[in-house]
Length: 175
Length: 410
Ligand code: SF4
Image (cartoon, rainbow over all chains, first blue to last red; front, top):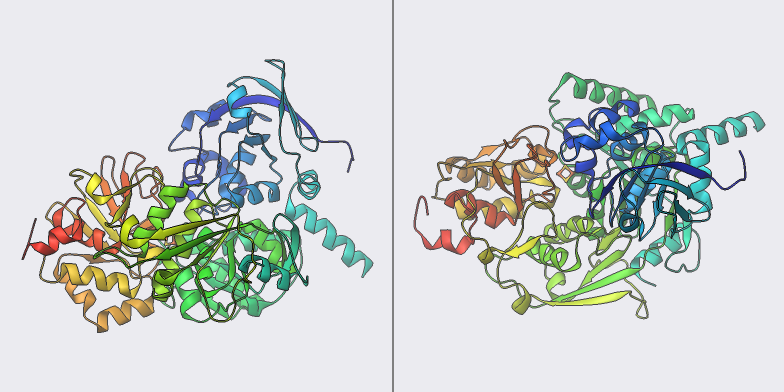
């Protein structure tokens, strides 16, 4: 594991409004899909089906306030992650979505201005630990909330499962 | 300290905690429904052989019961096998329970002061029993099954004091819709909510559960109504306090219009919305008092010919009791269909899906795009009384309009 601040680079695949709920991100009818990778097939399927075809690996989704409100369904965060989304940047997140994202190793960054200052197609470079977003296409630097070190550790590990797996494997080896 | 602070301090072994601090708390109860299968898979991936405490885990099937597809049947089967293998005794299979939040409460699993986590967002319901109860995702729950602990950011608290008396045909559902309309869908994000005041203290437990349940729809992490066993300290600090007087503020039923729960209007502000389907059920409003309200309106009346009424008792126990009291008979005589106790159409996968262009009035808790079927359908959220009255009228109405007429259609 490197101590360098995690830097991500990618394009903005979509800029969305407030209160993007988990039914919009991942419809309830597909909740019986329990293979995390397969959830990607239904990302934004009912409300914004075009996003999925536009999303390239490492791309960012940018939104206004309260992204991920509604259900606790982890498939909403999984569908984003396994569609290749590099991070979600929003003015605020609903709390369960935020925890689910970090636990799955999907960076979720709070920035009050990104949805105003970024357009679809913009190139961004984001520094999770410092809380900085550079919009390279517009030559702007945007403030974001630095991600908690605990969250960065989980993201570096690839999520809570690999994190706990490593921890219990080493404690078993010691014990 | 507020209730949230008190409970988190106790659970994390601290004398006191402050808002925004991060604490690691012991979990007293961990509930899952069918998504126990996702938890199970994550748990197996972590590679620890046994769950931390099988007595503290409760699993209740409710979202897709009886299994609506082969895929779900396989999921149910895998969870049944896991439950047996891990010695998890508190397991409520098809026909043994109903909606997870109702079953958890009915069977006395929740006690005041507990830390309860559930892989369902409406776990906030259990704040009505004085528990710090909140929803988490499946992967996080796998971590709880391994360690029995979880980190929490201590929330700041919004206090909501309610005085006055409900107008006729106005109930807890109208109160909480009114509050969500005022505060917005993100108005309580990350916050705890404490309800109190003379009007709350006169409410039944079932009605208090409605408040704690729907507080989730304004983002609340936990939402308490008062209990005897634990109370906030006199000097507790609140982020803000809201005062509501039912006499002046909520003179008539409230409706959350498509497609967000905070798009709330009084029923008189809606003009002639025809209704194709009416749904009475869910963890919000599928309890005995809700069925009673519907039965009192539908007794001797008929569901409108252009409307179908779907009743979903929240649990087997409620279903049985409603049958004994004659409510179910009245509802069926009026032309309603009764789904088996469980989530029913609320989750949008079976037992009452909407077609494009259809309008539904529902006692449930979400009206997001596509929540109950087609992305081009429309869901209005309302109290059980408004749902029942609208089923008779075939359009959204104030129950007093239906009750003023002797019979049949309005
Ligand atoms: S009744 Fe609806 S809101 Fe309640 S747990 Fe079931 S699906 Fe969720």
